[in-house]
Length: 255
Ligand code: HEC
Ligand code: HEC
Image 1 (tube, rainbow, N blue to C red):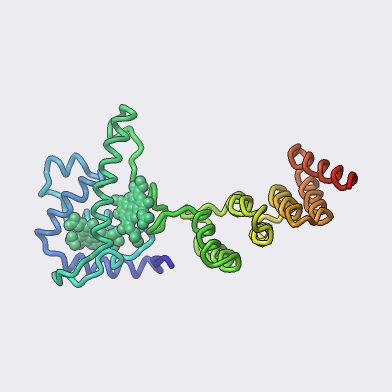
Image 2: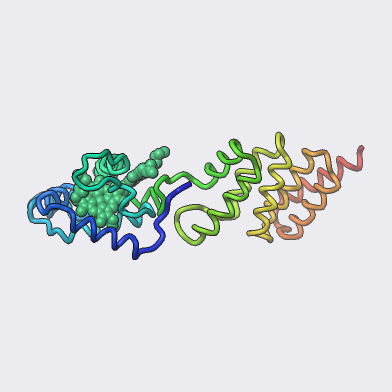
């Protein structure tokens, strides 16, 4: 789905190939504008645009590569001088301009200087992936288009590849947030996703409670009560979950 950078070594070797191919003049002008646009060497670029050293492009491009989790060829996709379109590079050029605009806005809005204000960078949004879509949206979309089994598989796959990095929020709440709105209409899908969450968070009271709720939608109160009781056992201080369990038991007794 998303093409990611495999090794640093691969990125660096393609990097030096590209740098070798770059004409010195093109390199210098691009460097000047790109460094200025990114804001990393703004004052230097503004006062001495032609004086940026060619080696400055390496850290900048390396920063972009890391921020998006891609290799050089993701953007520099056509042979140099071929005139073939490079659509991702065109987007990146726009993104560079956008990032420059954002930094100017941030500084105006906060009344801080460029040195004082937090600098918006590619990584601020991208966090290591080319299309920075929140995990909950990715899983919800797959669920809609390809069903719950595919969505669960995708979550596992992304967890394996990205856990511990900034790209996606694999916290306790993500799958609960995707599953809860499904509970009324598609309780089985909700239960499948919540049980997946228990694999990663076996002590998650709110996940047990959400499974309990989904079972009430399946009109299976005895199973619902089992899950609510487990939730209360894990988090006895949670008054909301305790209240739901009490209500459920009372409702059962009346019937
Ligand atoms: C996300 C897209 C993207 C990635 C990934 C990327 N670049 Fe660039 N690169 C650009 C853009 C945009 C420019 C500026 C083009 C312009 O404004 O003319 C540029 C400019 C350059 C230039 C100046 C000459 C030229 O082609 O304009 C070199 C050399 C370069 N990049 C090398 C690299 C290397 C090496 C890597 C991998 C480490 C890399 N780039 C990764 C988008 C990218
Ligand atoms: C304010 C947030 C934000 C910042 C900052 C930002 N981007 Fe993006 N970028 C996005 C979003 C959102 C998308 C996805 C748009 C879509 O396709 O839905 C995107 C998409 C892209 C893409 C296209 C990826 C693809 O596969 O289609 C490239 C390339 C890119 N950004 C490069 C950059 C670079 C380089 C920088 C830093 C100079 C940067 N972006 C900074 C938000 C940002």
